[in-house]
Length: 348
Image 1: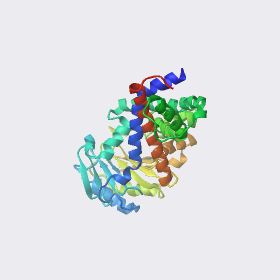
Image 2: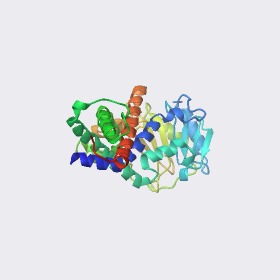
Image 3: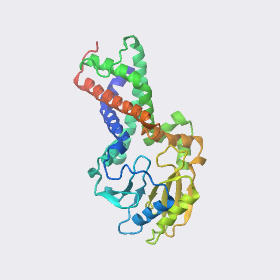
Image 4: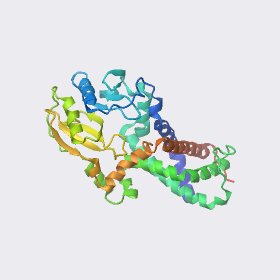
């Protein structure tokens, strides 16, 4: 019965997991292949330089982006987001390097959208979440099924033949070798979409604690002023958290009246940090803040999951491990679909 469930669910969802594995593998190395001028520039950390660049980009209401994602240690450009998928890269002085009117003009953007949404928004997220839960089932049930045939174990990177019996044996043996990495990558990815799955590692109450920690202040209902002192907002953020790295600034969502600033403390693994500040959109006053270091253990554990999933920690060695995990998922998923739908027959 377990084997039947494993085969049928794999035949139905294996291709989704294979495509997620392949796209995730490419995205792990995204900063190295974007190929835009100044992408390799060293990050400028000075608050005055960041304030000047921010003011240059945000002061003109007619050309103001919805958000700025600042340069990091691995990528030396600012990414600007505009409505309807438009965007631009700017150097760290605020000078525009390249623009696009749609995500389809930038492979790193549409590939990210595919990996996170399957080009289908919330519906795509649900499909990915279901496939992720199925992937966890595959790893656990596959380990149980492998135990019955453990005496025939023979590790191969590729099946000896493209017959169904050879593919099944290869699937079992490669799967058991890669099981720890697959569990890590699939679980951390699934939690990003289905937050209740966090209870498996972080314990009861984790989803509620995470939601509370990430909750912004109540909307203040003011309009965005054309005369905001953007440079002063950057200075105020650095004054409040002097050791933190400025990561993102975003215009108010809907009618919240809150400008969001995101920073990363030295202790944080999360690339964009979870240290937050909110400023009033009418006069730039500080409305509230949240220091990621003050969050409880469950929230801090949750904040570590994305860096583990996307190989944003651990250097080149860990990136290579996540690359192996993604390629293994691609191979296991695609061959599972191939053997189920096109190589049906008795398993020898």
